[in-house]
Image (cartoon, rainbow, N blue to C red):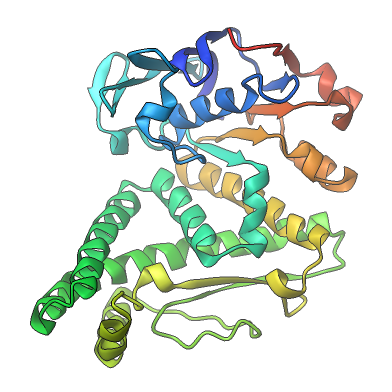
Length: 370
């Protein structure tokens, strides 16, 4: 369904002077020892599709040491159309091109979406709230340019407000910034909460399958203006006007606290997302296996939502996660990798894969960067 990648080219990117992969099929397994550049290939594909990197690098870090600039390209098609996605890295800047024509990054999102799953993603179940907020926003940014733009605007306003609070600026000046924060913040919270609700429904179904129906997964989104109890499953619903009013009231009520702490404590940057297994907080009470089930369900739900909302299968980028999952969870993940959903998988050991999967995969052995 939709576009799939047929060719990847990297030039002066990370450890690669040159990397080419042609005639790319539905499933590509990149195998080799550590430090040969497997993750660099996955990161390059993510930059070309999601327009972001799970490593959060600077442009200078992406360009190969000693090179003046870097270049990435992916050719994609669906039988009716052929597209060339390019990213050029130079002078500390990224330039995006579609079929050779310059484009804004925001206009490239969603053309060929992707879902990336790395060992660091296990923090989604047990790590800080910022990890969960970032993951939901990253998904939202691929699904909607509005989500990306409103998040960017909110973060800009938040940085400005925090600087004012740190500098102990006049109260009226902080309150004037609050007006902008309410406009951006209420919209971002509504976007994010609605998306999280979709994710939660899909996650619940996947988790039930992965756990063979033995456990139930619930999730809740708690906006910053509501009291947060990590021990309770609570569902909040609100429209944009309600969010604006609630956010305004909370900012007024906690203004003195913000000035005393010299940082903003109310807004979507303080929203909470919790996962519960049979009514118990997964981050606190979940076993390692249960937490990994939560993350796997999150990633499968992410891919499902992209397919439903964009009418385009995402590219799955699985970086060294097979070693982090037990046999049953590996099977659940592999079962999701069907012929109409393209996947790139990195591993140090092919023993993690069943013979039938390897029979339909293209196995690329990486020995050293070239």
